[in-house]
Image (tube, rainbow, N blue to C red; front, side, top):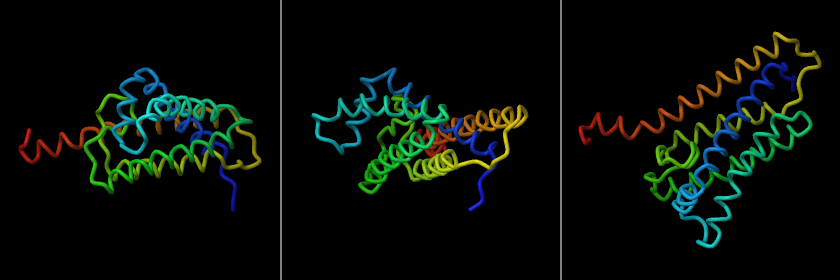
Length: 182
């Protein structure tokens, strides 16, 4: 398998680090509301909800920071994939139960983003970015222009991720407007 150019890998690392850091920090800021989000999934015994709601944001922040440290990147990517798989499985279980009107908790604990299959697809793309972030790079050294391009691409990817989140959050409102049920 060919090794990717360092620009792609660095951009994927910056994108995924930004996603995990912003998500974890948002959840941490409003821990009590996030605890309600975790409870809303109805997958855990009541006695575990508070602990999981405390640990998930810390794990996300840890993954985000790890993706920024070269020696920790392979482990951080693997942990990020595990965490992403865990939360996506929780989403899929609730979708299979027909429970779409609960907050996903992935954009903070503001109650704005409901469960959907589009959310699962978004998480699959994020998982792909984590796989790229863990890949060894081509042997060429990245120069200043490469680093600037990777930074721009990572930030642009983060902007696209935020835009996708907003579109997912607005989808129920747009459906209601279209159907005249506002």
